[in-house]
Image (cartoon, rainbow, N blue to C red; front, side, top):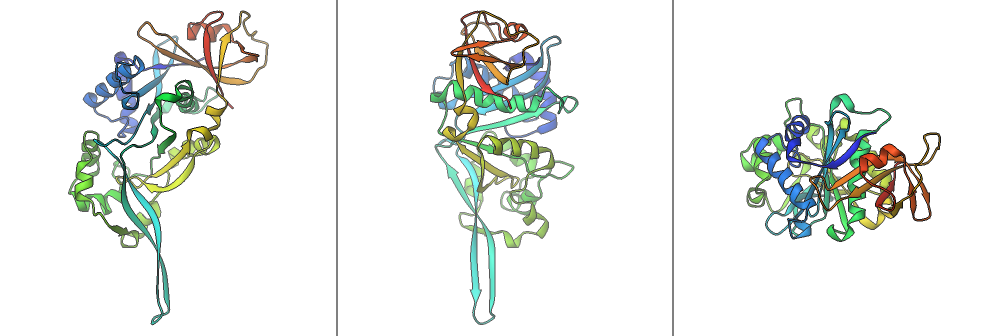
Length: 343
């Protein structure tokens, strides 16, 4: 049984190893930036960031016996503010017809847009290559725990949830879309632009054209990649679709990756959320019950949030848990636990 918990300063080295594999805006391969992200997460879990919409939460998945971190994910309460808007490219279609030539064309058109009071964003999901797949489903645990936490604290999050999926990149980490578009307007390499955007996206607002960009002008290979999902991200795409997310006609202005979105009320995991009490009796090893993700919170101590994947028997408002699950969650009879399905 693996343990999901809130990230601590001591996890920075392990998170750095995972960031080297993903290197995204949410999980950058940058020691200083990672330290700031973990610090904000720690202050968010303890409510030291006073504005709930300014909070972000980083989760880690560890092997309890060794303390080894095998993966991470995160939730940003609001992606897009007046100071740092959520920037995207709307994708639409324009039709043109010439009666003289009897020629008809449909063109894909990109238009820059902004959210100044944006949605909640889920991101930063990465599992160590050695631990991907398998019966424990670590990636799925890290994906689901974000919805468990959101369900526990609905008032801290927006009514819509956004997921920006990674598109195919070149072997050296560059984006073909950025080479054909963003680089021409900013003069920045992809990695440099990505790094600068973590602090300030003002250069995108000022340097990108305010009008329409016809994707027809991009090389055919680049056109095919617009809104495409990387092979290694296909599993995340399918998982999101299963719980209620749908593709929207927007892409990331840096790499052309697609946006998936859902209303919080439509997310199946959030709808199925239950708040229960720990029953007196343990769930016996021989009992066969539905697999669920179970979370618990503490107001004291360094670690404020814990969650495990375990078989759970729901009896009214009570939850019968295996002894190991109760030990990892550090809960006893009558304590509150929070449950969502893990199908």
